[in-house]
Amino acid sequence: MTSNYGADQIQVLEGLEAVRKRPGMYIGTTGPRGLHHLVYEVVDNSIDEALAGHCTHIEVDINKDGSVSVMDNGRGIPTDKHTKTGKSALETVMTILHAGGKFGGGGYKVSGGLHGVGISVVNALSEWVEVKVWRDGKLHTQRYERGIPQNELIISPELEHATGTCVTFLPDLQIFTVGIEFEYTLLAGRLRELAYLNAGVAITFTDHRQNEPYSEIYCYEGGIKEYVVYMCREKEILHPEIIYVSGERNGTYVEVALQWCIDSYNDNILGFANNIRTIDGGTHLEGLKAVLTRTVNSIARKRNKIKENESNLAGENVREGLTAVISVKVPDPEFEGQTKTKLGNTEVRGIVDSLVGETLNEFLEFRPQIADSIIEKALQAFRAAEAARRARELVRRKSVLESSPLPGKLADCSSRDPSESEIYIVEGDSAGGSAKQGRDRRFQAILPLRGKILNIEKTDDSKIYKNNEIQALITALGLGIRGEEFDVSALRYHRVIIMTDADVDGAHIRTLLLTFFYRYQRELADQGYIYIACPPLYKVERGRNYYYCYSDRELQEKLREFPPNANYTIQRFKGLGEMMPEQLWQTTMNPETRSLKRIEIEDAAEADRVFTVLMGDRVAPRREFIETHGTKLNLNDLDI
Ligand code: 0RA
Image (cartoon, rainbow, N blue to C red; front, top):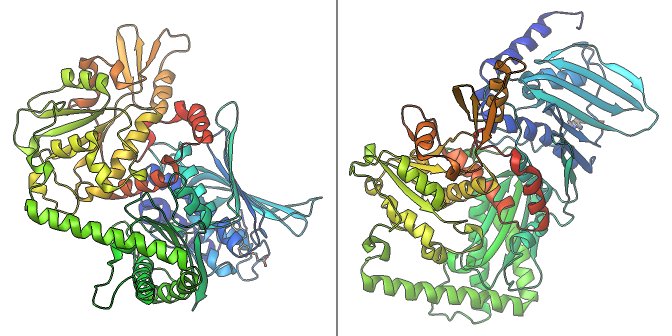
């Protein structure tokens, strides 16, 4: 310990104690989402170093003991002593809230919602942290426990003159009481996203928890341009070259990549501010949409594709078939909305508008063929929208869905009172069978869905609503389609419970359903009508007693209770269909004994985000990933 235990030291302890007392204020939750934020927080520091131009490689490792290491080849956190406090800069960064920014670094501190709280918060919420800094030909190390330094900086000479930082931390089970198991998929999704957003930065991600380490490298020289290529990989593109804009004004950096596709009828625009996905949009997206509409209209008029007496193309016409990524870096970002994922800075609207306007105008002026094909696509969209509007007026709002009967495979409950009724959305017919036999039919309805439903990412609205499984779902719930007002009073059940297997396919279907609800029936998630069922993973039998375990941790704890040479059997439930109806009722459906997880809007937003980077990807590495990690994924450890 440092010897000068003065006022400074007491202040430090009070600061970190405040974080440990109210962790939610700093990282949102102490559930899985908050746990994963610790990693993002540490990685963000290395990303900042990369943005400052001093770091090219970041390595993230999940270690065998469950700790995580984040290593970079940046300049290394400064280690020189502060004359005033007698502490090293390193110790200051590790122990004082929000100290990071004081030591230079980028001016684009990520401060959306839960990010940007500083590495000291990770320190406060970890059982231990070990920091290594390579600088000035020396290795500096220091260990902390629950935020408190355990030794002075240990300085040893290094032969190699490399620089960099490595932070290893083990989250504190006293804080994260539901467990500290990191989920590969979630971390991989965010790391890949960061690699796309920061062109050229290589991020290596390795999981050492199995016998064979599993590793992936994300590095995209083309940055968001490559992201757009990836998003369009299965579509037919309208123009060969991705339209790319980058520029800076008043300290705000703007980067945009655009690609129109022929066989796509909606738009897919991803927005980011300071590396945070702005799911709820904001001023950067408003600026982009405004300038797209204005520029395409103006070029269309110049090229005489719209006559003087004809009206302008609407924004949605212009955006039809557009895939885009916009990433802005703002010195003082303001994040708004329930999930803090909407950029509020008003100055950004005009900056995006003018920077994109200049480049896009020039791009299209010099490429009249591309301009014409984009205009033609928008004109078609305009005509189709007009035709659809006339058709709708003719039918007088009599939608197909309104008149359709309840789906055949719905096993409805007898109650007609939504407030006491629940519907289980179950994966597959065999699980559906068990659930139908196991339920209490007075208030529990069962809707089995077949297979993978559909991939929302790759399809447009009209196809989604034509899909049998989605139609069955919407009709069973009693809801209309997007665009018409959402009417909660029409909702037939006030608990919509997603019950999928605890494996990769189950996780996929759950993510897909949450994404669907998030995008098309957001009110349901907003108002807390959506739940996740928590089926057990194991049944342990010993003599005449049996126990259900809902996570690997619970299983380990149960086994530890037994004497060393006890006889017992473990049954692992591979799917819900393997459970007897009575078992399913007892463990998962009986309101007296079951546990349900209510989905909050943030969970649905997170599902939407993971879905975008991971779920559309069906290339070989993903298959390999599922084979390696399939058994590790555990429903009970997920927030989503
Ligand atoms: C401020 C100044 C300098 C380095 C860093 C921050 C830094 C912080 C972290 C956190 C993780 N990795 C990092 N790498 C660098 C360097 C100032 C100088 O050398 O002049």
